[in-house]
Amino acid sequence: MAYMQDVHLEIVVPHKSSPMAKVIPYLFIVLAVAAGLLSVLNFLMVVLCLGFAGLAWFFMQRSEVEYEYSYTNGDLEIDAIYSKSNRKHILTIEQKHIVKMAPA
Image 1 (spheres, rainbow, N blue to C red):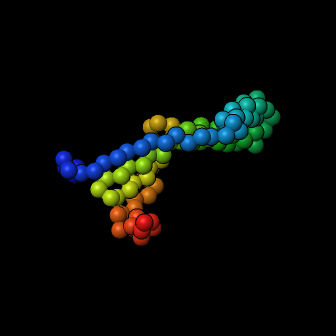
Image 2: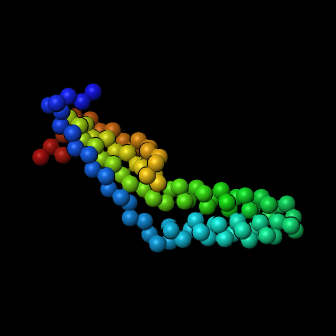
Image 3: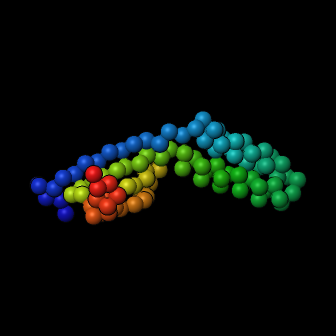
């Protein structure tokens, strides 16, 4: 619970992704379409089509990442935000551990 005298600082830092990370999901989409077109030939291509489509969806969900650093009364919390919708708690560091890490 936050009180009036609490110290609270929140910073959101976007992750800089490489150009290749933006190309990979589209590559999987192209592979899924190609495997889908060839699926008429056999069942293995149907499985490959579904696999490539799943990989494309996974990489598109994880392609945009922001990290949120929240400092409240000496406690530091780090969260990752994927595609501006899914939040995952990464780490909580208490004040006594921060003092041990950087005593000066």
